Image (cartoon, rainbow, N blue to C red; front, side, top):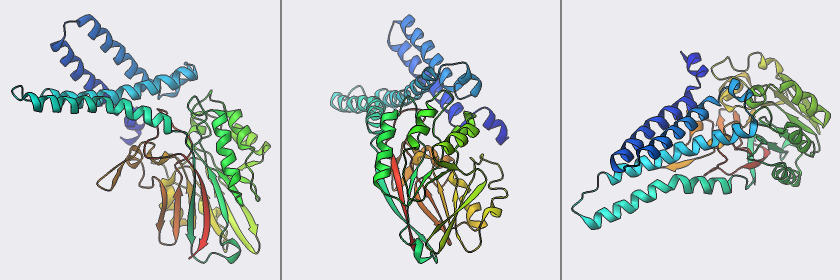
Length: 379
């Protein structure tokens, strides 16, 4: 059953399509009852239906292959924005249609509130677009039990979820790389999703990542979008050419003074698969063992295998996050409890970066893009 739902892109694609069509039916019905321009209303309804349908269809790789990447990107974005607007307009209708006719002052107040609700998605989207590429440098202390003295204070800079595309230019990525270099870290990590889809400027992304500087070099792992675009081998080869070693079910030991850190890396671990099969064999006894995994939901398995720290991305921190009654509401929580920041379990930790780029719509609300600087510290 789970595989069937995955094959039809049930969440979020099919869910958003059903939601959008349902809300559209409600809105169009209201417009037809209120106004006489039936031809215009029905034409708009057909255009809206086609846009929603295209937004869903373009989640499938067969549709991506037959469409230009720029069209793919903007059509998907327009479909998502339309769904958000339909939500706002439908909420506004609920208020408008329930205001008592005999209380003019109250009716005017509630109509104004309804109008505000109607435009909130549009204004919020505009705000999120403006804020989406305002990168920040986030410094986090990572406690590791019995950390050797020579590793105490070691600084690791992480760049993840770049998604170089129509929504993030090479110039903006170059600025983020400059920020990462200013951190003067001992080691740099790139943890997947260099681009979003086939046709995005992958070579430009690798070229900019080749500018990353750290004393001990640059390591990385691959994300799900490398898999979708079928560029895993190309990224591995070209990354090595510019000085980035992508670890694909491999490990690499680095020595700092008398201490050794063992970095193990895995390709994207597909949801509902057996996580980290055989990765326990990459652990080096007596060393500090760190796992690079694009998706953070592997953390319980990594902790059980004996990894001291898992470094991940993938979630974008939810990309759009609202805090309601001290609870964070975002789409990433549907997939994993490890959405953003540092989580600990017994003697193991996972750090999840919000990353640089965006997918779907070029919007970030409540989740600023970041370059993460992780400082190892003894407990």
